[in-house]
Image (cartoon, rainbow, N blue to C red; front, side, top):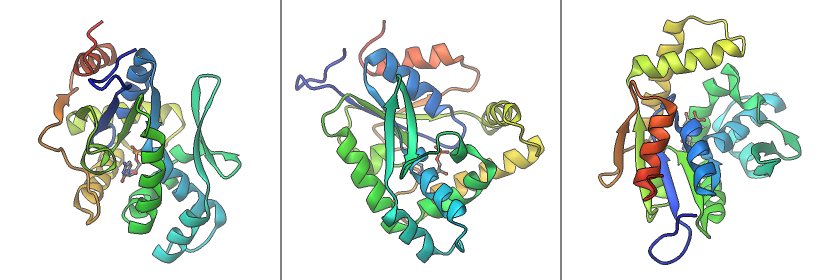
Length: 227
Ligand code: DC
């Protein structure tokens, strides 16, 4: 297991745009490091899922109220991380196009972010975590031991998402998916509170044309473990 200079397990922050492969890479790197993987996007998605499930009008007020009442939790079950909204396992249902279409709106709201960031910091307080999202290095864990900005060309990100969505029965076109990704990146980068940003000290990792194994290897090197 990799330790930081202070003898504690490290914190690893991975940020980047949609479809850059953050969750795939963060999960594999966490396994190799013996750390816990924290998918912060899944937490915002759980709030969006609950708003849709509750059938309430998607106003800012209703979204904030839903987030404040909701118990969002990441649980490790049989070695895999599962996402819970109250007592419902929403791991799969937070990946639908409906949830994806609403999540950027949810993630723009200050009170929603405050609650999620507090939970995220609590989960990382003892180190030993790989956390991915949009504002991890800039806001959630500004003192993270390792900061990585993971990206890839829009074409490659669209192709990756397309494969993933097709397997789940998505019936839109590749061009639609591309536009959705561009729109979400724009909303996430231009919002007022904690937008997606690459902090200057983050290592830039452009994964265009790289295999998953190559990217994980690079992340391990950046974590101080080149095995
Ligand atoms: O990584 P993802 O696609 O599952 O994230 C879903 C949305 O949540 C994304 O569009 C932006 C938002 N998000 C955020 O604002 N801050 C984070 N730390 C993680 C995700």
